Length: 70
Figure 1 (cartoon, rainbow, N blue to C red):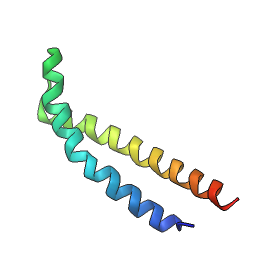
Figure 2 (figure 1 turned 45 degrees about the vertical axis):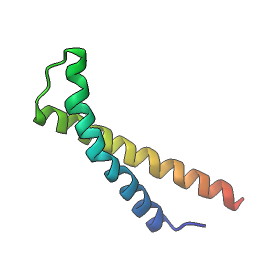
Figure 3 (figure 1 turned 180 degrees about the vertical axis):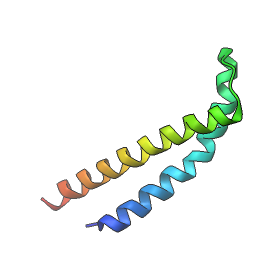
């Protein structure tokens, strides 16, 4: 079973590695739909989605670990 600390570390590495991709995608993809966006707004959107991804990933990881031990 994975410890809670290890779960947090794994989730952080996973989510933060995707943060750069998310930022670049937000910055360059939204203008394809004619949505004007600047780097600050792209960063704010990325931070919001990163926080949601962290929480979601941690909860799912813990649920699977709990299920595995039963």
